[in-house]
Amino acid sequence: MRRVTLVLGGARSGKSRHAESLAADHAGEKTYIATAEAFDDEMCQRIARHKAERAGAGWVTIEAPLDPGTAILGAPGFILMDCVTVWLGNLMHHERDLRASVADLRNLLTTTEKRIVLVSNEVGLSIVPENAMARRFRDEQGFANQRLAEVADEVIFVAAGLPLKLKG
Image (cartoon, rainbow, N blue to C red; front, side, top):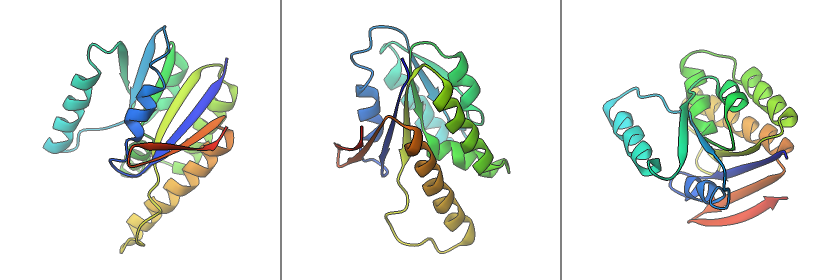
């Protein structure tokens, strides 16, 4: 049965922890679609820490920094994609079409029969970025969140570790 949940929040808001908690009652397979790419030592350490935290928790990890849709199609069981924001950053870095990529993911979410949780940052709650690239990213992130929320069955905003249901 198709059920898509979008979990939004700021950095260190508890959104990933909340998204993972949604899988706690799932008795079958759990697939973690990781979108991060290691561009520097700090990110390598961060990725290693996240993998270690999931180890032994029953997650199968698929790394899909540019095409999470294909990973979703092939993934079994409960699917958690973490995160849309990092994926969009990867797309910008590799000069891909962000809107088309988001549209493809959105369309996949409307046709699949899988249980999917997406994690995404809400980046538009702060000051206006000082440079054009950062403003473009903020805008594209906002558009992506809107498009994904439209097709999600449930949207949850997390702040200070506390989930607030916005939809569903």
